[in-house]
Image (cartoon, rainbow, N blue to C red):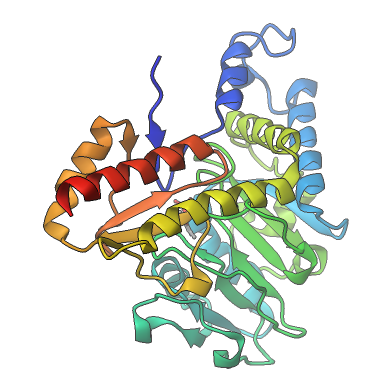
Length: 360
Ligand SMILES: *Cc1c(COP(=O)(O)O)cnc(C)c1O
């Protein structure tokens, strides 16, 4: 069996021990005589799986007791609608920080629910940086401030938490949740699609502070109401059971690795190696301001873009796939999530040097 180094932005690489455990438990989970896929979501087996997953996530992230953890569907994209549907009602206005492609989509959906103010934007420099606190014009009457804390396509990450006073901060953390410790209490809502740094597609995690429940605008479908989901332990209907199970195995793996502080050290080592390789000469370059470079998604360009196709082809032949940049940005992008082993980044860096020596 030959596994590739998969630098996909998502669905993305999963920890090999997790996949191996899922394989071992595929036909018979813990003596139940069933696959997790075949279990009733109301049965005691699955109830123990989802309860353990929640407990492990709470432990890993240090989620305070006054926050609910929801296991939902519809991806981060549905949260672009659920956030305003649940939160905007009170004042009918919200602030959004415009950081790039994903923020743009969140803004477009929010506009359907009320007045959206762009509190700050990085459009002036092609979304190559995270707008600083001083650039944010915040409305004290806004129902919330929305920030995309890691722009997966642009490769821009907030390495600090915007200060929003009494206004709840809402964060789309899809592509860097669990990559390092964060202070959950600084946020009103945190959401993330699972397929980047948590588990399989089909699961979305929402962490929401208690006082923000119960304010959905009239007409909000029950399935999209945070409170209805919280009141029913995310089981208003059948949850994505197998995705929850795999996410739970990933949380166990993270605990085994040593938790999020340890994960951050490993992620810094990997990202450091890759950015050093990009910055070393003039052959490769990063479009992102140094202070705001993502530890998870690393876009880079070749000086001569006519070599792009050769780079991708040769990388693939060397066992490294999904390095093509997003169509809106071009160039290359290496996503190096938690589950990307150090050896994968070492192999990429070695390949980049070799490619340069032959084509530079
Ligand atoms: C991938 C991604 C999304 C969209 O996620 P889906 O689960 O496909 O809806 C939204 N925001 C960010 C930051 C992402 O990386």
